[in-house]
Amino acid sequence: MVHKNAGQVERLINALSHEQFDFYIHLDAKVDRQQFEYLARMPRVRFIAQRQVVRWAAFSFVEATVESLREILASGIRYDFINLLSGQDYPIKPADSIYRFFARHVGATFLSYEPQQGSAWWGHAITRIEQYHLIYFDFKFQYRLQQLVNLVLPKRTFPLPYTLYGGSCGSWWTMGVDCAAYLVNFLDSHAALRRFSRFTWGSDEFLVSTILLNSPLKDNIINNNYRYIDWSGGGANPKILTVADASKLAQSPNLFARKFDTAKDAEILNIIDHTMNHTQPRVPA
Image (cartoon, rainbow, N blue to C red):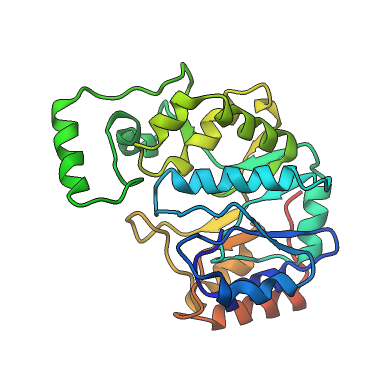
């Protein structure tokens, strides 16, 4: 999922280069493709044809993800996993170690979640379900209207009799293709859920996990997305990782980290590359 910095995306692809990995780039439809066009000449790189305009924290992120899954599943290529990354993610283990980890776990899906009951995250995130959010749209005075709507209308309820699952790390996952196909078909066949989700904030952090953990495939899901993400700064976005985080990244058992911005600190990626190439990686079992 890409919206800026073609050079950083190129570096991500190079870091993950492996004969068993293909790369599908969904480029936000708001972005001029010309500066990213050269990436299609890299080995095993394809662009998603059905581009979506993605608004931060809006359901359009889920829509873009699902349309990307649809194209990958229809590619005619047999995959075991589909791994969702942003252009600001980066591997913190060598590509071959990542391949061998997933080769040992074919049939599983890896995502991070918290059940609603007893969860501190859901203590504040429940407003995403109960209130109306207009972030999906773009018109004048939309947030004044949002405030008025939530004053006069009753609380919303989730349109399915499901236990809710989600979390701050719920947006990014590695999904078995059976779960990917189930997710696409489920959203295609539940128009009421799609309508509900257009009026949510940050649905990517709970919608996928809620659908899959209420599905017949739930026993194949492992509650770990193997991403290092630092939320210590508070707020709605994780910390931008820098050289100050190098030792924590080197010690992490995770496979990927986010997020990075080479415009702010490119040296951290040099350190990661050097560490991956000169130490014996500790890869989870």
